[in-house]
Length: 115
Length: 116
Image 1: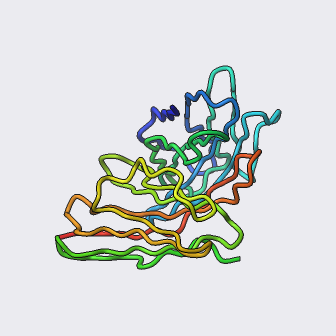
Image 2: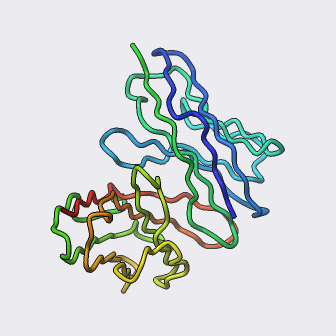
């Protein structure tokens, strides 16, 4: 079974500052992927960043980076230089390479960027 | 490249009516997923197809829900009869699963369903 835990229902950050959104996971799959999606108020699910369980380096995509600590089973999203347009719900998700191939989602964190 | 296409974007219907949601995955993607998002339950898988074959339908709530994928470029999710508790946002997602690597799923814009 797979489980994703996001313990921060809501976060505030000042514009231009960095923010870390927490995510911990549990799985029995030896190979898996971790994902972060952004859901703005318009409702679509936007893929942000991916980390493979065997990747040696932390993933980065522009202002997004994933702080992957495999031993601690954590996959925190770091957003640098926050912008007003970053205000949204953020979901951590995972899927395995065997067995259940669908995404398992966390409950999400609502980020509000303040000017 | 076109992303995942879903229709309709919004649907309002009355209890007891049949509802059909449609999805066109990204060309070349061989896995298709239907998810439902509600405030109470969050995002949950309904059904997953690989190469047009249903692989995991454990999330389909009950016999009122059915899904088909007649070809690689089209899938439907049908609710008959619909009930108010089916009100939710229904997402379709696709990914290019070829084995070996865990691939990213890309989501359509969703269908916002309201059953009165």
